[in-house]
Amino acid sequence: MDSIKKLINNPDLGKLIFRLFVGLSMAFAHGLGKLPPPEQLVQGVASMGFPAAGVFAWLAGLSEFAGGLLIAVGLFTRHSALFLGFTMATAGFVAHSADPFRVKELAFLYLASCVLLFFAGAGKYSLDRIIRKK
Image 1 (cartoon, rainbow, N blue to C red):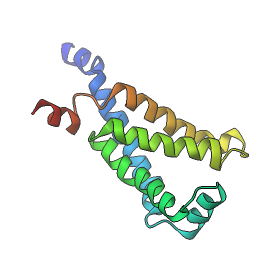
Image 2 (cartoon, one colour):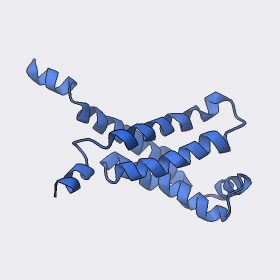
Image 3 (spheres, rainbow, N blue to C red):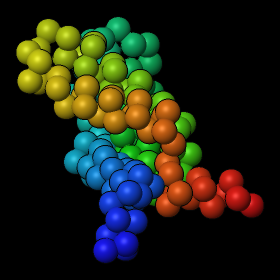
Image 4 (cartoon, one colour):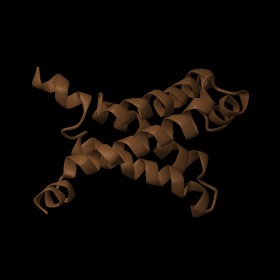
């Protein structure tokens, strides 16, 4: 019974499971298809008024794919969450500004996840923790 209590009362285990789901979902369900950025993404970025749309499309794709992977393993978690959070804020507030909430909801959920990870960090079961101990 004590081992079950320890398992349930382990916020770092919860952070690990959360990071794995959020990071891998972002990387493979959203980021992988944006590398290299398809022309539709580049045009979408240009239509939002960003200069050098090709560069910003690459940055968005990399923040989703590489940032997602980094979040999953807990490496540079706060930095990755910050970059990915900006990407999700842009998606929710700019790219989908005219869309109904159900369309932009996913971007806002990822944004909220990034905010949580930015403030809470990766937790004990992460590469950030291993590097910090050295």
